[in-house]
Length: 210
Length: 210
DNA sequence: GGCCGATATTCCACCGTGATGAATAAATTA
DNA sequence: TAATTTATTCATCACGGTGGAATATCGGCC
Image (tube, rainbow over all chains, first blue to last red; front, side, top):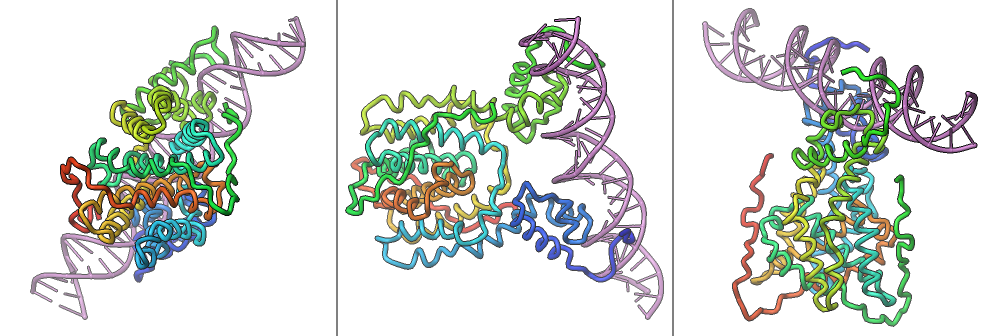
């Protein structure tokens, strides 16, 4: 158990031991479910070394996910083909990233504030827009609209990308207007009428935990 | 100092004391910067009462922000007018919420996982899409596209709304395709050609904080 | 080679955090 | 009044993180 204090002999690959242990534990138990002490135990090192080498648990998580992210999302293929199919290929790339890799396991197990936005967007905004629109494809259109709105919230406010944050509100509205218009536009009745498929959230608010 | 143990006489408005203290502190110092003990001290109650009455710090934050949110974002007016102007009114409502109220103060003090996505979306995805598109309005179109993509990431993966999460990947692509198409479509040269106003990120990566 | 200060890496003790459980007492209900 | 439910205090937990002591490596100098 008790090793001697001070720097050990040789140059043990402590950082690598930690990142490997962390990757495994983060994948198995998520961010919140993984404790610094557990990572340290798995790696066979003192828990203080995680702060020392990576600054913090989040710093370690950032290192682990950055690697995972760069390895997984290949933007190249999506940008290679004809311009007409670009939107589809981009969407495909994003969905593939989360569907095929273990990436979602790593992503934000849950950072508190999110619950508020999640419930509000889903139970209030989406439901009311769908109700306003009416018709068979109302939920589809509302879903698309909420995605755009959620994207605006995410990329400009919650987690501001510099490019988005620099814009004035008016610029944002000008740039996003056509997009949201399209999201809300009635869908042409496609020949394969597998339509609807979506259900409205039904209950207004189960009140959760009160 | 030492009050007697057990239930106090009368029915003191403990919950209200706590929410008021919490609102003030969250606004002044953000979520992370506000400790449960500080809220309890400000409210003049034992810190365990926060867990008791609200389940957790997050629960309390949820209550406080939900009120703030419902009070600030008036969805009604946006849904009142003509359908043609709906997208603009929705965008207006969202931007107003963050621009005019102190709402952004409440939002995510910073959950550093976000940094990964922020840098990646801004420096990689947005820049490369703009480069691919070319032309005077390339950055506008790329910005709109990144918003949609960021919205997809946010509402489906990072912070999954139940309605979005229930969908298959194929459904997501089908629903979002027209929206992303519109985001990427070249903008009609508006009569007032006050020149796009947007600049490309210019430097590829200022390296920030390393 | 041999010493020596600067720097790097480790262990340990400890801090403040959010949260829980036992003890306690008032309020409410039967 | 007796039983039950609700509201509070206090002790204590595991958590993430920090600072200091200990011990190694590294670079320069003789």
